[in-house]
Length: 92
Image (cartoon, rainbow, N blue to C red; front, side):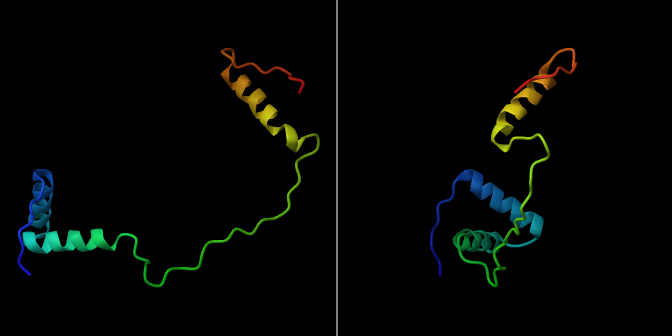
């Protein structure tokens, strides 16, 4: 089918450059780009099974309260930010 299509200057330049690099015609590169654009959102052929994570029960180490992990993280972050890099004992 023959039709007139008005392209933005930057798109026309990119298509011309792609055609030059690939050694293909402007028409072939333009049709290919339009096909790819129209196929976005189509379901891929033979899509794989969804990924599933097998969870395992894990326990925290002795003396670690899982309900206070944010406090522990904050305490460790403060130690990292100390200018002298020294360690201090923090009571939570």
